[in-house]
Structures are given as structure tokens and as C-alpha cells.
Image (cartoon, rainbow, N blue to C red):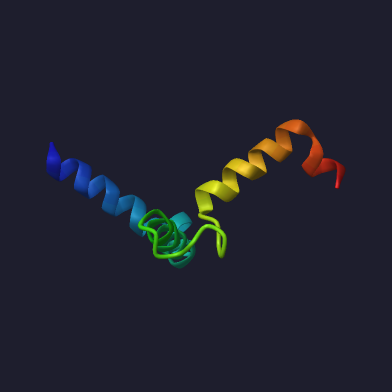
Length: 67
């Protein structure tokens, strides 16, 4: 079973949809890891998760669309 999960993940990683998005996804993952580990202060550069949460809140309240 473990081999099938590994081969499935490898197929997704090599698919044409993911192929062009590898570098941006890798950079976002490194950025998130560095933010979570405290290497990048949140006051200097918020984590991708914090940005996504704030964007969602602004979208839900309608403030994002207003401006």
C-alpha cells in the first residue's frame, strides 16, 4: 500500500498541471516553514497562511471587494 501512495504522489508531481507550478509551490512551502520556525518575523513578512486567513476574512466581510 505504501508503494501505491508513493507512486500516486509521484504521478501527481510529474503531471502537466503541477509541472509548471513546482517552483512557486516550493517557494511558498519554504516561506511558510521559515515563518513557522521563526526565521522570518511576522512583522517583516507575514506567513502565507496568515495572508490567506486575512484575505479570506476581508473577502467574507466584503471589504476586499469594496476596495
